[in-house]
Amino acid sequence: MVEGVVGKPFALEARGRWLVAQFAQPRAVLSWAVVNGAWQRTDQVVWLYLRKGEIANVPDPADWMRAQMHAEGVAGAVGFLTSRRAGAFVEGEGFDTGCHAWAVGTLGLSNALRAGDPSGAIASPGTINLLVCCSQPLTTEAALEALALTAEAKALAMIESGVVSTRTGQPASGTGTDYLAIAWPVPGDRTPYAGKHTPAGAAIAQATYRAVSRGIADWLKERDAE
Picture 1: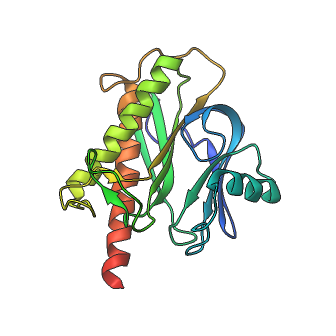
Picture 2: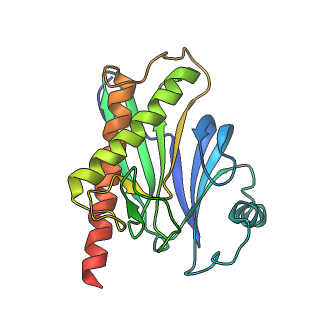
């Protein structure tokens, strides 16, 4: 198998305020997404682009999001909320020794923070909402490892970018409200590991790093143009 032979497993569709990643077949998804997080089997992952201040006084954003998803007909999807400009998203791809990975998501950094910063209220919304898909089936242990490596690759891209924490001025490793998801095919022999020494881990980290790096560059360019 060579890079580029395998196409990405989802089709992206912009539906007004929604971005929908549609899988041809249901995938296993592990995440801490706002709606339908944890372990899921679904054929959709969605992002809702929020209007400014839209959920500022909403007592339960998860319940509010569930209602929006039900109205849109995507109640069974894994759901992300994003304050990014409507229609803005980034993608990245990775490949290593027969394994492909694809990342897609939204990225805003007005809430950039460093891991370990003092806790406190959100001053300004902005978050990284990323879906990463692996071409290999994963065991539970490998999926958890893949999710940890996704977070590590995201943090690496952030630190290398030079973006600093809005709270301490130190190099930021993400935002205060990042949401990450890993998806993989259900049928087939499951790989037991997804760390840095494995094809799955290498491909997942590459896709994550490339998508986040592109998102950072886009966000900085737009901010500087304001």
